[in-house]
Amino acid sequence: MHTRCSGQTIGLGTVMYSHLILTPALCLRTLQIYVPIRQFFYNLIHPDYSAVTDVYVLMFLADTVDFVIIVFGFWAFGKHSAAADITSSLSEDQVPGPFLVMVLIQFGTMVVDRALYLRKTVLGKVIFQVILVFGIHFWMFFILPGVTERKFSQNLVAQLWYFVKCVYFGLSAYQIRCGYPTRVLGNFLTKSYNYVNLFLFQGFRLVPFLTELRAVMDWVWTDTTLSLSSWICVEDIYAHIFILKCWRESEKRYPQPRGQKKKKVVKYGMGGMIIVLLICIVWFPLLFMSLIKSVAGVINQPLDVSVTITLGGYQPIFTMSAQQSQLKVMDQPKFNKFMKGAMQFLENYEKEDITVAELEGNSNSLWTISPPSKQKMISELMDPNSSFSVVFSWSIQRNMSLGAKAEIATDKLSFPLKNITREHIAKMIAGNNTESSRTPVTIEKIYPYYVKAPSDSNSKPIKQLLSENNFMNITIILSRDNTTKSNSEWWVLNLTGNRIYNQHAQALELVVFNDKVSPPSLGFLAGYGIMGLYASVVLVIGKFVREFFSGISHSIMFEELPNVDRILKLCTDIFLVRETGELELEEDLYAKLIFLYRSPETMIKWTREKTN
Image (cartoon, rainbow, N blue to C red; front, side):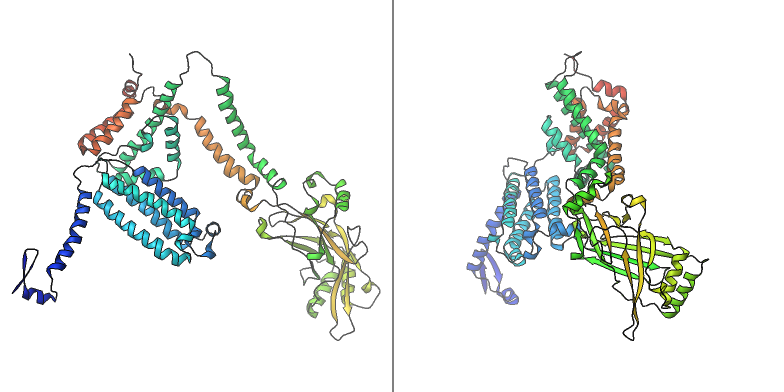
């Protein structure tokens, strides 16, 4: 017994073996679906007639727009919490995974599209188009809403990206329908010789790695006998000749009569602009560092001012901090009075830049030195032959987010003690209940009343503002609590001399001059400093400028070519024979081009102006 299907005979035993019984209706339905699809793709790949066209440039521009949308609108392709976070992530040297995947896939599709274009394979383009259409629609309408937790209709950036991608699909389908061009000659920007093409082509060559990547890809996916270095050599010669051709065409359009001097508009327009530009580059670091803080500087008042005093390297005798209400901004009357006698280097400070830190005279920590160390300290103080000094240190904490280079600015000063002062301090520590042990001891010229807090970590005292350029005096006394069994001890300090606030209180006072910091947006430049800007910006730019103004004599042979038409035609001939598959002729023409550049006499003959 047999079953007929579309004119073919199938044995019943075979059908039973495969456990599938095909009815004529099922076979006919399958063929009705399969045959039109197969015929559709066959007609695409093998058309009877095709008006060959080239829309690769438009497809590349559409892909580039999508690439830009991904970079600047990445927040729309992630969760709500990741909104506008790509900039901060990159500034923290963190690359989000979804962003990296999307950028690499977009860039990869652009590379594949270039390879298909160079190989002129319509079948590969059809397969690539089908994969992209199904993959992108599945991602846009199924995966993306789940990732972003937003509907596609509510995601404006995703809609914009999808719209541009649909434009790409339309162009790609048109390219498949018409077929790839049989000849791909040169860059699309080199089709005309005018200022627009010239500047666009030079801008194209300025993009980092774009020219090199295009040259290598073209060499990989184009049939040629040239090595990679020879290929790049031809590309470089062609680019150089195209630029010269544009300049020669502009000279023909705007000729300069012989013997006529250059117009003042040209001299002052071009020359004046260059002069202003060079002057700005030379003085840029000074102008930038001066204006960045005086005009756009951010006030960075301290959050905490701490003082520590140590005797002879032992446990500190005094520690105190000033915060919040203890940090006062100098009011206007006191500021005006203070600035009358101020020196020139303080004229850039405003009253908001000066902070007065009021420090309590009683130390905020007990003096818990051990008895053996105390006895050793007394012995060293009483020994006039041993060196013993007092160390005064301070630290100023700022808000790092405002643009300061360092969060804390610190410094310390060391002063030797006089023998009489050491003797009085030793008696005070010994606590012999004598009159001298209960009298405050004056330590002369150790207190820096005015300190400067720059944006870095190096705080410095301002001795110029003190009388006779000397530090101020302080008095110290060791207080004891004899009412309890613990016999607690702590030091009490007092600043002698004139103060801005609390003239009669037993306390310390420190005046802090806070340098303005550059805005965070300009911190990457201001962080170099004046010398750093000169070394990294001015000298580097000066090196390139010097190369432009010098060494011109070495390139006269290749730059001053009156007529480059024959060389340009030789380059296009190399492209043409390569596309037609005449690879031996390609080698001969390349050898001719190299000989032309090696022979000055032949170059002169080839580039002479045409005579009527």
